[in-house]
Image: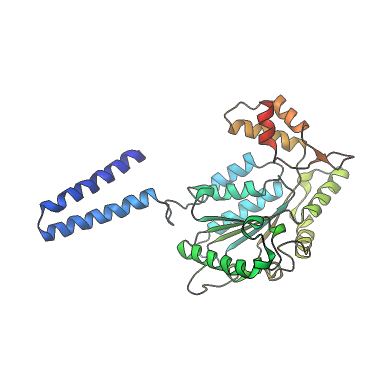
Length: 331
């Protein structure tokens, strides 16, 4: 269907071009106008643009993905769904949506960012309106912080000017130089417009391992008390999480005005994963590869993962991060 539609558009454009030499100047102007309109239509058809054809939130899709693809994260799943659904359903938000995802490596922070992008943008993470910054790659030298601040401001302003429904993902916030992220504070605040640009419909997502220790400790305490991890609620983690992040002088959030001025809408904790979740990850990866999930293979993969604390071996050291490579070995 898509190819047929494109063929008809190209055929019409070619016909319009062929007719140019066959008519008088007035008719030629009309034909050229038609050709230009068709040209713009073809361009928009082939190239991503900031409109509902390319950007449309799929609330059902996000819920399904979180339910079926994210394991062991009942708190994060609930917060993400409500936060994104509420924000995307609001035609006139007062500020951008700002999410800060925290937890141990391999627990699903990057994966959730990908799910959000895939359910808003037709091109998902490949969308020209989704921008990913990695601290160690894009901001490696502390001595160039002033330059980074200016570049970051210009980059965000330019991209939101191009499309107000832009998404910015900042990975490795725990490795970002303190003070740098404060440069974008105005864009996250309650402003109608800044220099004629509105940032209120954009999404900012911060990913960090900072605060992971406090999340692990709370989860471990519940486990040692014989309580179900699903009993853990956001209120059990949120205050200690925000404080530990704010006071960590090795983190990009150290004494940041983003926290001090309450511009982060949600601190989202990602719990450490247990054996059962690693099994689920392995089965999901087999399914994604077009294979029938094999419980025996999933069990071997899960048993091959390193767990901590050493005496109790409860949580996976790397979460589900190494599942793909381990499946390559076992399948």
